[in-house]
Length: 76
Image (cartoon, rainbow, N blue to C red):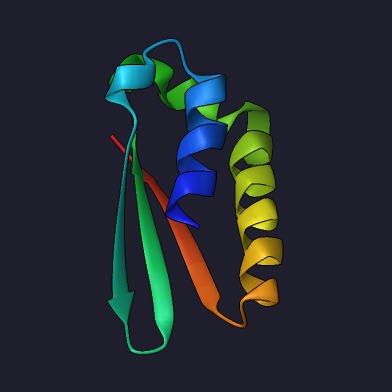
């Protein structure tokens, strides 16, 4: 999951080196924190949050295959 989010984010941003994904588990949920450079926040979120929603949808679909619950948080 972590690698999937990282690959998608790096494809969207200008500063690929500024992309960092941290994975942590709470109870039975995996939380993926996506950190991007401040100037790339708009590219990852998209107009009206469409890109962020698409990233979360793809990750949720991949998580279903592994029978896990995954949350993607986008942070600076």
